[in-house]
Amino acid sequence: MEQEKIDKLIKLKVSLEAILGDIDKLGGWDAANAYKLSRLNDQRHSLEGEIVGLGLITPLGYTYGSDETDRDISIAQSSTKKKSDIAINTRKYNSGYRNLKYEIGTYIDSINAALPKDEA
View 1 (cartoon, rainbow, N blue to C red):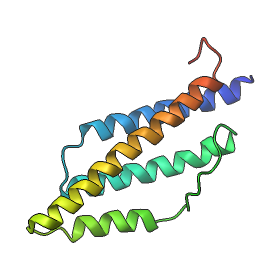
View 2 (view 1 turned 90 degrees about the vertical axis):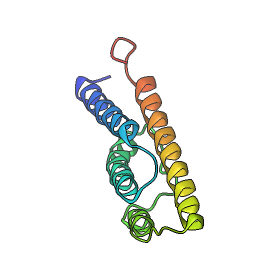
View 3 (view 1 turned 180 degrees about the vertical axis):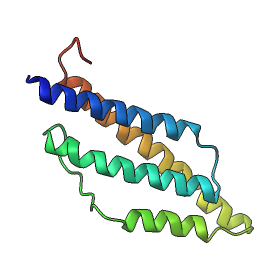
View 4 (view 1 turned 120 degrees about the horizontal axis):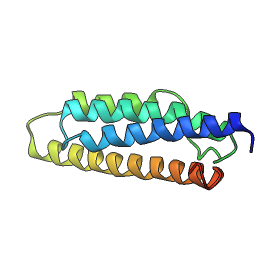
C-alpha cells in the first residue's frame, strides 16, 4: 500500500477517534447535548465521504445534507417540560448516541483492516 494512502487512513482514524472521545464526554439528553451530538454527526458525515472515496465502505443510503441535522436541532429546540416530550427526546438522543458510536466504530474497524499490521 502506498504511503500517501496509509497517511490518509491514519489521519481519518485519528479524526474518528477524536469524535468518539467527544461523544463520550456528552452527558444525558438536554438541548445542548442534542445539538452537540448533531454537530458530531455532521463531522462523521464529512469523514464518511472520504472513507467511501478510499473504497473502504459503500454508501449506506445516507443523503449528504442537513436534513438529519435540522431534525436533531428541531428536537433540541422544541424541548418542553412535559414528561412525555422529555421521554421521547431522551429515547431519540440515546438511540442517536448509540448509533453514532457504532457507525464510527465500524469505520475505525474498516480502516484498521485496510492498514498494514504495523500501522493499525
